[in-house]
Amino acid sequence: MNNKHIIYTKPGNVDVLKMIEAPVSVLNSNEVLVQISAAGVAYGDILLRTGVSPGAKFPITPGYDIVGKVVATGPHVHRFKAGDYVRSYCETRGYSTYICLPESKLVMVPTHLKPPAAVSVILNYTTAYDLLIKIAKLKKGDTALIYGAAGGVGTAMLQLAKVYGIKIFGSVSTSKIEVVEKAGGIPIDYTQKNLVEEIKRLTGSGVDAVFDPIAGSNLYVSNKVLNKNGTLVLFGASSAVAGNGNAALKLLKAMLPFMFLKITLNNKHYKIAGKKTDINEDIALMFKLLAEGKITPLTANTFPLKDAAKAQIMLENDRPAGKIVLDFDADH
Image 1 (cartoon, rainbow, N blue to C red):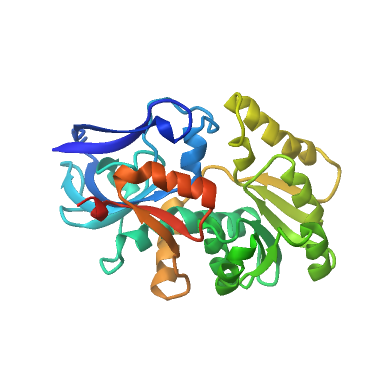
Image 2 (tube, rainbow, N blue to C red):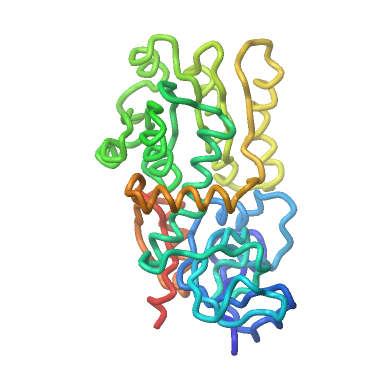
């Protein structure tokens, strides 16, 4: 049995994506072999591809989140059997037809959920929950601003904010205003209005939190829309992807404003989203909200594995509404 998977041969543009085929790895005693049905496409995949993510060793297979069916189990695996429908936050190797994972990294998925919807919950909604509740510690009645509010994480944040009674303003382009409104947010068209002036007009004193995935000079704008005790949460550095030059230097340039703001003497708080903890508990909670109809994952588009480069181009250039998914059933 062979495993088809996408690798990045080196840092670069989508030309570095290559599909290769190799025998499926031999299972360790505590591992489960999963045939992947769907994998998420995340902006983190682009940061990894361009060399912005520190510590990556090439060649490497991207892919944070997967759902699929168990094919085989190691002798010390007791919670799963062949045919079980499972999901995992695997961090890498999701762009593969098969993956070997420790039993502890897998959780059952309700069988009625289609793979694209199921995989959309894993990374986007746990990230949104982490940002809103665990890092910014927002509560009912609080206010916040999110950039890219129509994207995968953005729409997840808007839906969760509605569940928890948090008022969210979403920075979007004109064409995506309706998406933000449908998800329960208040859209602000950054192409037509001054973001700082509009937030101050709508709130008076500014918002309780800003979620910034851009970094660089945009952080100064984020700081201005906060109220005097607000929290700025950095959860990406998309500005480091733009242009040519050394990836590490671009990342440093993108982070410098955050470092400067952090040492500024004021009552505001500056935080960076880090590695997720209690991820399986968070995923279980998100699937509970999904079952209750309180959240509805929005899938922007699906692509077969062989078109992973096209999927990344769409995410990077179009920033579509919702989650982009690699649907492995489309390969058959």
